[in-house]
Length: 470
Figure (cartoon, rainbow, N blue to C red):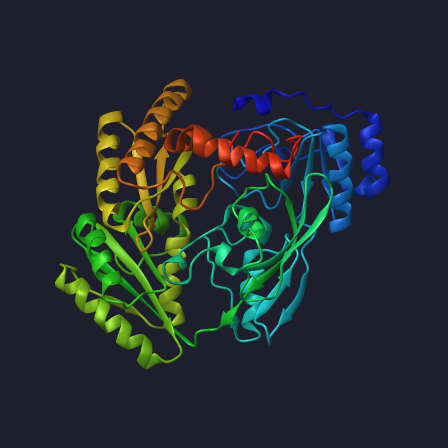
């Protein structure tokens, strides 16, 4: 299976650069020392490699012409948005051309009759939310990194905190314009609600991490904006009690918009990072829940039932955040957890998903690993859908020891997720750095099938090579 990436790719020469300059102009083509170092890595920075050229595109036709040329000359191409990924998916492992899509950032249409929004891939997630609110509409996917592009969200099938009620990005993609590795342009799906017209190519593209095609336009599904939202902050004496309450909440049929879990250590880190107090930091573990609906009465009915369940399961209290200020106080801290951890030391992340009733067991296991290996481990995540974010901190470990221990702890955690009937990625994808764990979980038959799908789209393997299944 590895033979696909042993092929020879063409290194860019002056003729190739001349083609790019002729197509885009000198202001949108960067080579050599002109390339910003940021393009060599993603947000986590675990893997680094410079592309030979970075090009800024402004249209589907430009992307198509670049891909057609690259395919003809066997030049590797990597599409890139904001670079906020954490698994090296947007790093140019084999050099070649990096296509920066962030200038394709137009909101093209809001269709209030069909409840759709048509956008280019460089539109930021935060911009979509603000824009559709003007029309009393709602785009539910809510990944933590709001400065990510929608193209990146589609390519990683991003989830986020609201996934427990509303689902993930794939559930909100109605149509796509995709440039194939050959340079051909496909229009997939559209504004229709239902589609049983052959294989779902759209759903293959969503989550493909830029290995099958380049998304240059998307039609997104919208919902009516909920009129009321209320959050509950629920402290527990132990994480196990907090997590074990979640299945009972789900079973009650009062489905919150979000169910997050957090521990005291990350709350204190967020307080220090933001310079402001969390409403409570005295307990060892917390659930943070949000409910939304069209009336205050509907929302109160739902959260009253859940509050009673939490108290019956040993919650120390239930704090209600029903004003914008109170909600901002708790959710700003939750949104700052990753940055707060990163601000203290070098770190790496394990992103796994396990059945909801196995979350506590997995987190307890990470605590055991922390003690066995002598490394700090911090965790939080989406208790409502079993998606965990576990951060391993370097602190003052020497580089060689850090890398050795990091490899050991990751191997243990990914193995444990599989033992608990989980998967090695909940929402951050596979990219370059998690391929080994994916191979170990699925085995040759499954990975061969994925590789054959890749080759059906990209026979020369020029589009984002070395990622996911290779």
